[in-house]
Image (tube, rainbow, N blue to C red):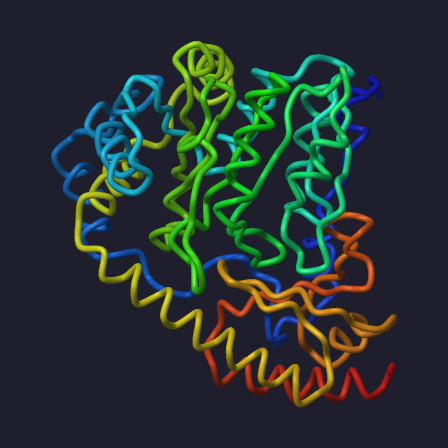
Length: 373
């Protein structure tokens, strides 16, 4: 058998997937990171119309259809107040591809990428696939990213650092002061800040801010996606934007890896961006209710959990054996160490499920906690 590449040998199947495979078919799934709302009807209709009108039978431009990129640019003008040229946007196969091409275009062999620990599982793996070296940076006790810790970790070999607010797996939202610091660090140290903003609209306290709002140089690249904003995970439509020179390099990777994002998904995402946003408010209000239900349940059980300010994840502190006890009782939760060594002693809970199942899961978690405390 031929040898495999060193890069692929450095990564393995996500610890999240391992948990799913260990659980029974009828388990309550608190590990799945996707909204439980339908895609907006006007987005679905736009895809159907595009198919029926014969608009999706050929490749689109590498960067995506112009009207979609204009809608993305307008969204960020309204939400972040930035003057974004549609030519500086690439529509991608979800936020995952956006992260991938950002890494591939900016990280040289052996260069370091600072990543939050605990943090989204792809940051470590995509750094390694790009030939880089991930450098985990521990979070604060409240699970927010500490700009001072990032700055202290920068070396001559640092190519980039990743920030994520609202955060997966933590649900933490960075303050405006911290986001301004991320921009300053990118400017002063001449390193790239990759800002993962795919949960932008799901904020309960405070507000979402982006480092690109405050940067004085072109050292910020932003990753976003329709997946979590509009409950379109299966459509696989994300985007990445930044300075023209950076976009030029990222599209070189994108054109060979992907050619273009799915054409029907592009038309659906454009409609979601331009259409009624009531579903966004509905989802956010629902997730906030579920968060409060979960936190009240944790308090009754005696489980300590930093209050998530956004996304739909909580990361409580749990004793050894808790995750296994939950799995044995038919509730899927993800061990914190799946997201980095500093996640050890935590579990990630996704509360993007209905309230009845959450209540049932809390009863199970109470039994699991009692069994191991």
